[in-house]
Image 1: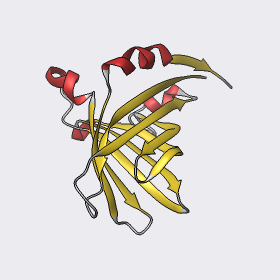
Image 2 (image 1 turned 90 degrees about the vertical axis):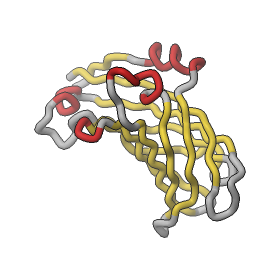
Image 3 (image 1 turned 120 degrees about the horizontal axis):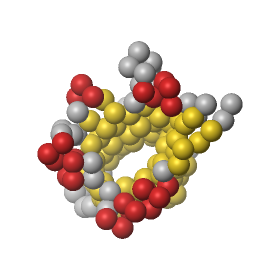
Amino acid sequence: MIGFKLSETMEGYHWLPAISDDKYPLVFTANCSTTDIRPFVDPESTRYLKCWLEGKLTAVGICEEAPIMGYVEIVESLGLLRYEFTFKSHGRSFVLTAEKVNIKPWNFLHTLTTANTTIINDRDELVSMGVVFLKLKNILPMIKSFKLTTGE
């Protein structure tokens, strides 16, 4: 079987709406992969345009280098790319969602490099909102990280 892997680092800021509007650094590295590309390209599959991710997250005020696990998917009908992953900090579980929205051929430079984020805690409360960017310094490492993989 043929699959692929890719690593992407998004950097930006977030704020804690219940506490203040001060902005704090937010960085995540998502190592995305699929071991079999067939479901990824099959519109009938539940894994269509969806692959798993793991990596690290730093959201100052919430966590530092926390391991993350989840997925990234392209939602064609909504014109968006969504990351959703879980992490733990201080004995609590959280979910971060980041969305690159309104993806169209004429606005790739903005929409594929900017994502709005939210962090929700295990009580379904909004903890953080933010914006992350694929910065110029991270584009070449991302491109170089793309690899086709083979397995059984």
